[in-house]
Length: 107
Image: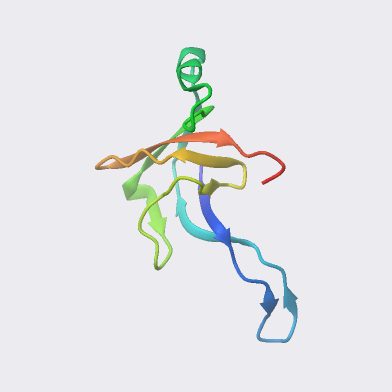
């Protein structure tokens, strides 16, 4: 699966043609061949009630990850495909093994 990773929002304002543009999620990276897998019940139970409570794990190879200028890492709170929130980035030498939580509609 291909993913887009967002952090924060762009500032709203007028574009070069004078048209109003609402703020939108700011893309910090894209990745290809990502595997997002559900966690087992025992994994989820061990995290219940902690700030690391998550439902999925994303496996992202660093060779398949392209950061936008000014960005070099995935951080807690980043959003993936506007569906998941990164709970724990899990930065390993050759990959990210990030714990994810399904994004609530209130975010």
